[in-house]
Length: 328
Image (cartoon, rainbow, N blue to C red; front, side, top):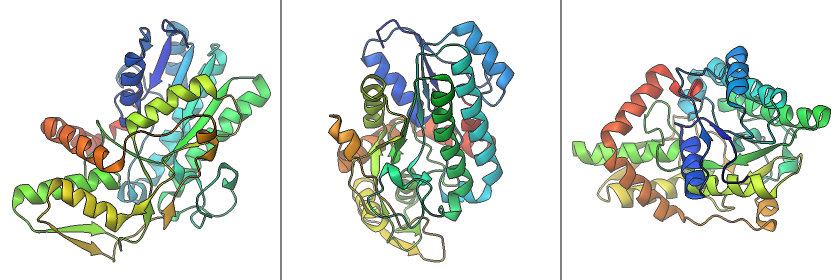
């Protein structure tokens, strides 16, 4: 991508899309295309065709979608499968019709089987049943991978896919009913500190293990892949390191509210027991993450404090309007 290329970032207000925009701006790209949710509903094929015809993007980062943690996935399965499948389909098809030079589709590590051998290599896709708590979302994400591969095979489109691990960072969703584990933990400890409560309840047993990647590292990996990756197979993006939810909660407690006591509620679901990505393919091409987890949590909490009112508004919008579903 040269610095004047027309680049469309789908999902610009989300955690990933906003980070990709920041990284593109830092790299000197000066023709970045975006659209508000009101301007473009990515679930509407006709609207997406019209937008692509008018704006003619040369490169596309497909980071839009409906996302959330265990609770959101469990209570809104129809939204998670419909919104994501429609968004992927409309953008990929329009990218083919209007001559996009290269598209990067972003999935999720939940595409791999629940009882997957660890760490999870790209070849383990579709080898066993998925985690039930997020199966609709995972199926939509798998469909996105297969969609890109099908367009490559039939039409010769240069569409690639990357599967990030669990993400966190600026512009995350901190709503307790729809967020992922790390922003939810930050919010829980923060609220407890403000309210003077000593006990902080965390869902599950604390035994599952999770890998976490700062979203700025993912954005850096996305630009790297746009330049250095051409394969049909999806590629994992992560740190290659994980820790237990218990260890993660303890780390967040130390940063946010050291006096708190963590209580695990084993009556709540754990989700997948472990989701560690094998990132050897990406490492072999010369990319590695730079932000360690403790530093990333400190940076994210500082962002939360600086944007606390905004963060609450974003959280409320996510909970009540599910804005990420149609955000472009």
